[in-house]
Image 1 (tube, rainbow, N blue to C red):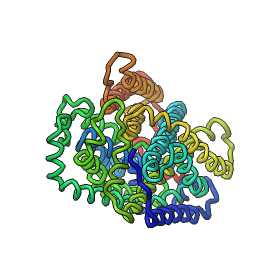
Image 2: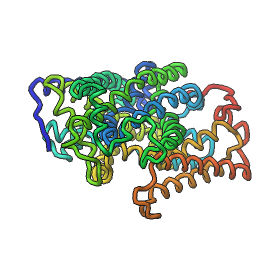
Image 3: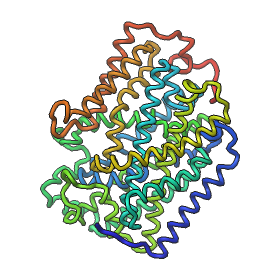
Image 4: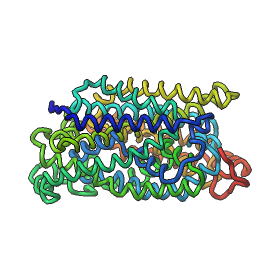
Length: 512
């Protein structure tokens, strides 16, 4: 395994950055007096800070490591996770869906689903989101360990535990305000670090023409330079990219992801919430290049060492090799700071959001309905620690079971994003969607996802069903089921649906 030792300059830069982020998070944790302060930052976030936090809540260590590995395997098609799966869905979320969450006065997406359908739908999606977020924490730990093993010589568990402790220090104390403030700094550092890797890599590979020449000489990379691969591509056929990613995974992620929505709910006004989304979409225009091109650089420069993807191939090695081979002292410290930024921003975003959902959608409805705000605040802080430890526990199975952390993340999403989007669309667009329709759509959609993801074991399909097709067909199944069952069951009264359905405006604005 290739290894490197950081110079004194690199170590100083990394230590200064980590110390600065932790101090900044602790400083902004002052004044946290209530659950609203902890979970929604007291609705005091400026639009630009929320927008920067949205970027790094989406783009973090798992994406830096995972997209480099998957672009090495599959090529330019991975850019579509931002071009098709992000920019347009972000704008749709900003101008259509976000106002409903804001006006409904909710803390979480499952809370909206509970008001629109019933408590069963709310609880199901709260539990499944919490499980997904714990799995996401595990993927972020694996990303950190892949880099730390190379740069610091740490073993897997030392890397994972150290990361958990560092993030837990300020997230457990400061809540969403500390998370967003540290994310804003992390976003800037992340862009600088990713740009350095991309720029130096392109220079070493002879520019884009050098990459094209190197890729064209390999037999297994004939579709690497296709933004939309042909329909017979085994993993990313163009219909699946357009339907599964463009119509389901992308919109569902930006509309229904608690880690995303929670930042906009913490802004000062509805207009600032909308502005944060637009700002995020503008910044995200550069990330397809910054995160995907490094994988192609590695393919051009180091394919003889990294090898051809196969059963035991480890895509998490691609970015560490680029960092080791391309970056000089000093620059290496900056990029390490960027990677730490990605690790911490992803971890703090997901752990804070999972804590919010447990308190709002599980603890208060089922365990202690009369819980005071101070009790919820204390529980939220303890849950941050528990969730970080849960991510530690699941990290090694994720490392052993997936070719890259990005693949793991998207596979987890495909289990429920289709049904979630179906219920949100039907719930917001028509008052005819009933509680029983929501329950039936939820169950059939998730069962479809589980069945398709289990195709190798259930149906003997050796390569399985690509997760983009899983997302699409689970969405179609759930949407159809909601419509059919709702046609034969009774909807809620119009008065209950005011502010929850676009044709029934709220009589007054509700503040969470």
